[in-house]
Amino acid sequence: MRATLLLLIVSAALLASACGTQTTATSTRTSPSAVAASTRAATHPGSRSRTSSAPATSTSAANTTVTHTTSAPPAPLQVLRTFAVAYGAYLDGRVPAATLPDASASARSQVGPPIPAAQRGGTLALAAVAQIGGGPSYIVSLRDRAHTFGAQLTLTATARGWVVSAVSPPDLDTILGPPARPIQPPAGSGPAEQAARAFLAGYLTWLYGHGPADAIADATSSLRAQLKANPPNVPPAFQSRHGRLVALGLKSTPGDAWTGYASVTDGQETYELTVTVVHDHSRWLVSNVNSPQ
Image: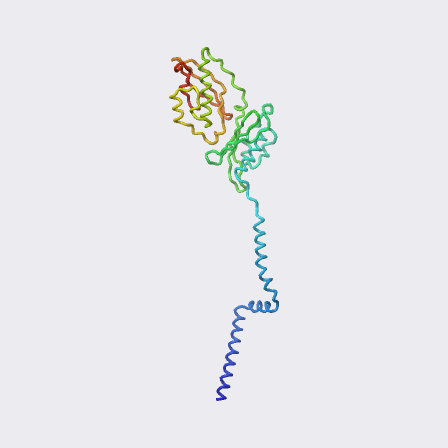
């Protein structure tokens, strides 16, 4: 009995020893660094806090990297306005074309001549910017004390950002040209001319989208109804313009009527209008007007 008991105790001890050796060996084979880390943790209790601070250091470095990023390029409208202001300085003769910012070489070659010194009306300032049909082209208006100059600018996206790639300069000959000489009115045309001028004042306001057809004076009822039924479709680029009568000449026509030939400008374009003035119930009224050509 005693021998059997002793044999069991020895067997159990050997088994326990074998299991412990195998476990240690397995642990050593699968993760040698785990044993070393465990030993350091036991020897240096403060190592846990140092280990936990490492991720914070990494996060701080990552945040620093994100903070120091390259600035985004200017938005297209900002580029356009910066160029337009500089373009006004060029037209005033204050800077050369080569210094115009954010522009291609082709655009700088298209800027046209500066305004002659004798015809400048003070410093040009940017007055308005209007996009054309939602595309990359814009109409910019530059004004001094005496004139409004309009130019068309086109933007293009490049690897360096937005640049002005094309310029249609203002028509200086039209804007700065001498005023038309008044046409000597023929005898008896006074009342008809007065009616034509009153009509054109309201008509041009309506034509550019700045007033209703009901405000047009000295028009026949049929013409006013026709204008009300067909309001003008004014593009955004034209909404800042205002038509102005430059000259008006009348010619007598059969049937107690007059034909008026009107020269109109809006600061950027000049065109002709023809009106028919008839005698209607003891009044002179405009019965017909053509569209701008």
